[in-house]
Structure formats: C-alpha cells, structure tokens
Image (cartoon, rainbow, N blue to C red; front, side, top):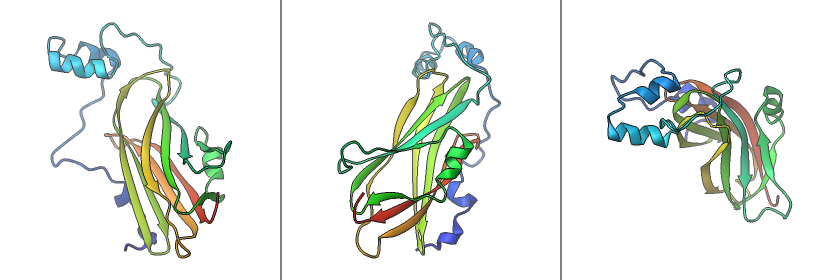
Amino acid sequence: MADSRNVDAEDFAAINTPGYKPAAGKSVDEYRQLDAGDESLARWKASLGLDAATTTTVDTSQPKFTVLSLELTSPTLPEGRAIKLDLTTQSQRESYKDNPIQVKEGAPYKAIISYKVNHSIVTGVRYVQVTTRALIKDKVEAMLGSYSADPNPRTSEVVSDDFPSGMIARGVYKVKSKVIDLDNTVWLDFEWQLKIAKDW
C-alpha cells in the first residue's frame, strides 16, 4: 500500500489525452449560436440547457461554480441524525479539518455533493477524494458532468461504499477532497476527518 504522506498533486491530476488543449472559453450566447444547423450538436446544447428557447438569469458577481455541501447518508443513521458539511465559506471548510466526524464501522453509506452553476458553462467537472491513515491510502473519483447556469442546485452521488470495520480499522482518517473541471480550475479544495467507531 502507498504511504499516506504521498498525497500530492498526482492524486488529483486530470486524466489528460495526449495532445489535448482546452479550447478558449466561450460565452453562453456563443455556445447557443455555435453550428446552429448541426442536429447532434443541438441535442448536446439542449442537454446543457442551451437550446434557443432557454433563457436564464445569471449572477455574474458569484464564482462560476459553487460547491454547497457534502452529505453522508446511511440507512443505519439514527432517526433525525444528519451528517451534512456546509462548504459555502472558507471558515466552515476550515472547521472540519480538526473535528472528526464519527461514523459507524461497517455501515453502508453514500456521499452526495450539492453544487450550483451560477453563470456561463462548466465542463468535465469531477470530484476527487483521497483518504489516508497510517499506510493506507484510498482514492475515489466521480464525474459530475458539464452544465450551464441554473438557479437550482444539483446533486451527485460521489461515493457508495461501506465504512471499514474491525478493531484495526477503527480510528481517525484524514480526507482531502477537491472539485476540478476540465480546464483544471479547482472549485473546491478542503480537508476533513472521519472517525471510524463502534457506533454513530
């Protein structure tokens, strides 16, 4: 297994195609007018909400893309208990770095990320998570997709797994999470901790 100290840029590097260079950015209107007669391109643009009939009021004072929260859900969570990390401010993100979130060993769980595109278009957005403890390193990567501006938040399931179990597995794990797009723009970069215990 890899040494946990080797969590570096390589863990979060984009999977690039040799020779690929991202094209210069275009505005939403430029994308709408692009190859208007191409039916397959028209379907792709419609999937992004860029068909000619769609008009969206956007707030350009905000970042193009905002990550709102990360939630851990499990059918074994006690009734009324929720584990939801507010990621909207730097101070909130910093607060999770040294305050482990206790979870139950062996419990099935899902991690769900909530985000919003405030203006323009984002392409190839992905979530990357690296979890480490002692000599253990585990990496998870999930594609969120490509989207145009939408006032309504979107959610994506980024992890579906069981927490480790057993005496050796119990303890505190460091987690580093990033959200990155195709142009290697980092929209989220924060550290948090999980504590595997006998119960929630």
